[in-house]
Image (cartoon, rainbow, N blue to C red):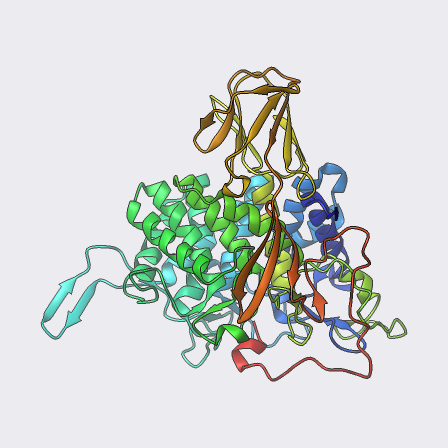
Length: 565
């Protein structure tokens, strides 16, 4: 019988750590590179403005997330502290964060969608360093500065009369705020969808309000949520929308958390509908399109950020009482993991070139290992897209890993619960899995009391339970197999029959046969090119394309909105 790789979340995190600590520029205090061209000869990376905008924030969160997964021995102090130093620089008018005047940067401005990342990173700093008074001051001033900049819509002047809005409704008059000029009507990001792009900060605002009792953050979040769900006309009554999936699903995460905090079912219901819509246009294994109804789906790729958002939104909805454990589990162990570049042997390198002018050519083939694609297809990574590797995805994917890592084992007053069959040696219990080669979950208890192992539909109806090797009756509690009386040191086991399934699925216009073993996609037909995904069989040499030769160039035929972030 064929044997396949076992999913190892910590190994994915270790590869991410490699990228985060190598795709940086020591000449500029470890400033990240967003723009990495692995599909040119020779491959290179270069600095762009966003490196010192959202990237220093998201990469700070990413490297902290990786450290939590891998443990303190993985601490990359120099790089982590450099990201933090960058983040704490370049503050200016209205409490907004701008960027340094680097040679490659032009107009110095603050973009409101980037403030979502900035505030998220400040929240993370305060989680790691509660006594950091500067981070607290910056977060507070950022929230208050943004609140001062919104326009509050109060009266609807219609053909039949004037009507006062009963709810607070806030929106920004633009998406670009110049450091030296403020609002300039002629200046826009050009990305469109201003309301939802600006609305990406909703989740970070709610986290700020929840953890720090910041009433201004809560007020701003509520006003923005009301605008997004009403006056913006961005979402229809079914939660469908036209445009950027990353923004919309991140907003859904914020809506769910806001609804839970305010005990407002309306926000939770709307978050659930947005989530359900994006799930309906995604694959069963986690391919999530970057855009909805903007281009034909055959022309859309999967930005890894979108997978992270679906995982995060699912977990927020789980906290609201909804069951999305299976989605979280399948997405993280399949497409999220597959869109990480594990081997750069196909990358063309010229180490004779000296790094200069914000460009680097050195050892790109080795440094790209651990990066994530912004141009995923269901069965391959596109090397023709300029985002074959995307710095934004490198910042968000590790955050998704930590979100999952933290939920593998949880506890309440009554139970220790194993929510997902993923290897982890937790303080509460050690989880060891056999998937995809052996359909079993083994749990070694570390404290007395009832234990549960979550049951998924793909396990079938013939589950067997054992405690210390002896069969026990099958009982259930809230969708989990229940072991009512457990002592520390006991071994608990859940097994179910082996079933390999070939399931047809059409994704991105491709008619695929997806080979499942339990929760794992182990192969896909037809295989993708040029960078094939799901090569999971053990003992088989993985197929990679040869290095690009002859000065090949990135595909520049993309629409203008695809060429810049």
